[in-house]
Amino acid sequence: MNMLASGVSTYADELIPLVPDFQKWCDTVVCAPFALLAEALWVFRDSEVGVGAQNMSEHESGAYTGEVSGAQLADLGAEYVIIGHSERRELYGETDASVNKKVLAAIGASLRPIICVGESLKQREIGVTYDVVSMQVKAALYGVEADSLMRTVIAYEPIWAIGTGMTATPEDAQDVCCEIRSVICALYGEQASSAVPILYGGSMNDKNAFELLARPDIDGGLIGGASLKPAAFAAIINAANQ
Ligand code: PGA
View 1 (tube, rainbow, N blue to C red):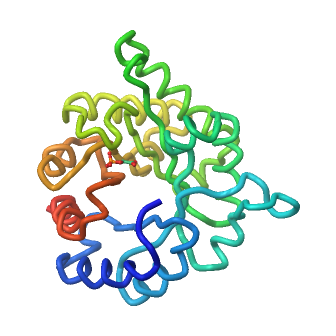
View 2: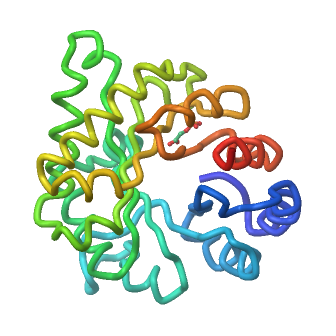
View 3: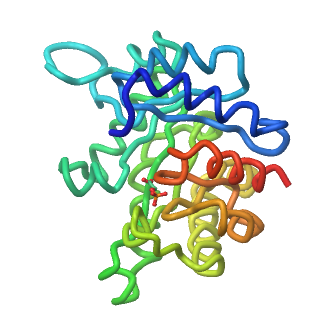
């Protein structure tokens, strides 16, 4: 919930020249709050930067005052939507079941869901990280057909690392991303599991991105704080493109 519409074009004007080749190895997507989506779609219209939302309703349409449907997002021109961010799970009562409904609704609206999973500090301390994350992935993908799986993106975001400056070590992030890939492999087979992008998120920045992104099962990043600064975000995109 950062920035106002007046800041969006300045942001794009600063970011775009700093990235020589947006799509060399990675896709770049900016996920904006609903109120800034139209502006973001406009300023990035001639660039290779995709635009997504940060949330959507699990319902198709109807009497859900204040909610925004997947069809409305797709109609605006959004391509992606973040689903189940830990802040929404913690602050707004989103559960694995509601995340699953939103994932299915996003796919139904031809959006690409970026599905967030991740353990709390307590869960890591008591040694249930893999159990928590595998359950979240399985629940989120329940009922997702194999051909739609290719349209999903999984973001592993340990809750304790989000916005705290405490990044997971590249080894720990790699281990959990690898576990996520094996969960997907068990559900959909090896080819599908290698095709689904798995991102790491949680205090990724211009200093640590290269090392994290060099790990075999970390295909990209879900960047929060650092993405608000065009120079830092550009450095991360350029690290992903190496
Ligand atoms: P951060 O946020 O990069 O600031 O830790 C990540 C996120 O909000 O998903």
